[in-house]
Length: 437
Ligand SMILES: *Cc1c(COP(=O)(O)O)cnc(C)c1O
Image (cartoon, protein in one colour):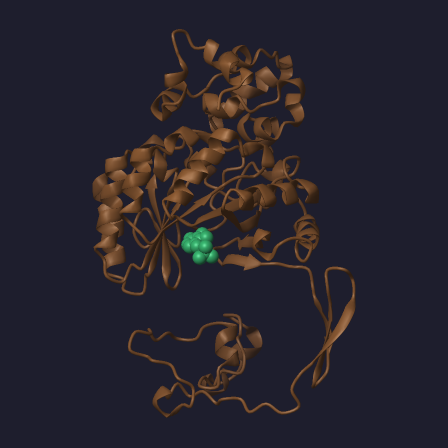
């Protein structure tokens, strides 16, 4: 669990020993925030130009790296190092593109109460901590990093929980931040207990990067506490196979042994993991450690991320290299989180090539073009939502009713809509109201 690189860094902290190193609070307290210390601990001398830029960038977007995560940087080639790139400020962060936005996902606008983003019908995002041990340079919530004024206190979190209590459609709550695992065990225990008191909350998810940047945080005490709160899911954020160290893997094993299903959300980052081989190695290592690759995100339009973005085609190429070539459960869903708050939109290579009334033409991952013969006769079940008179068995006792939206609505028999029309469509506004549909 301890290597030379870690010993070198530990030696840079006077009087510190391995017990300190393994103590997450020590790690957090000793995060590297200034350049001099960064250079001293890694024993590197950055080009003068970088040093000058450092001050300019960190005024806007501060740096913070745990000693542990710092120890993963390969100092022989730090310029190209994926850990360095994710943690050390780069001048490109000051390059603001014409399409960059402060809050591209409209998390603040889709917020019914502070700290809650309610975007989808049945689940909400609850920001419970604005602290992070490591400030990812590609953070989508960069606007909040180091923003001391917005630290949510117990009263504010309670307002969020009250919102959830008063919104029966919410069956899934995602705790995020910041990193929820920078809160104390007792505090997390309190939040989970309050949420579980709400009958309609069926499942809770926690998004945390601590298994990657602060694996010491996953302590036996934390895990024992989490176990009381099933069903609990955890999503973490590995971007590169190098991040799966012995310490990280042990943290993941502890969580998995506690019966917590683990998922991973990666961000596609230029110069870090925009390579089919790196991604393939990453997803294999994740699965080997009982973590299911969940999402691969297209880097979003937050300010200062332009240098991390790839074309969407790079993501599709990576998906092309995964689907069929490796186990289905190694393959994440590639998504673009729509600017303006539209939510995550999955994108994929095309597999459906053509179709007629009773046949579809498909291609597989090998390039084989094949056909699927559809049934010549199919008696669809007409659905008018009158389940009592339906031949299909749906025990509705427990099932919740929902209103069809979007494309689902166009497909439904019981809804008479024949088109979806953008608001303010000029042609439609010339007509009478009667004709709108
Ligand atoms: C990603 C996200 C969710 C969860 O989406 P899933 O597809 O269910 O994982 C919920 N709310 C917000 C605001 C999100 O960004």
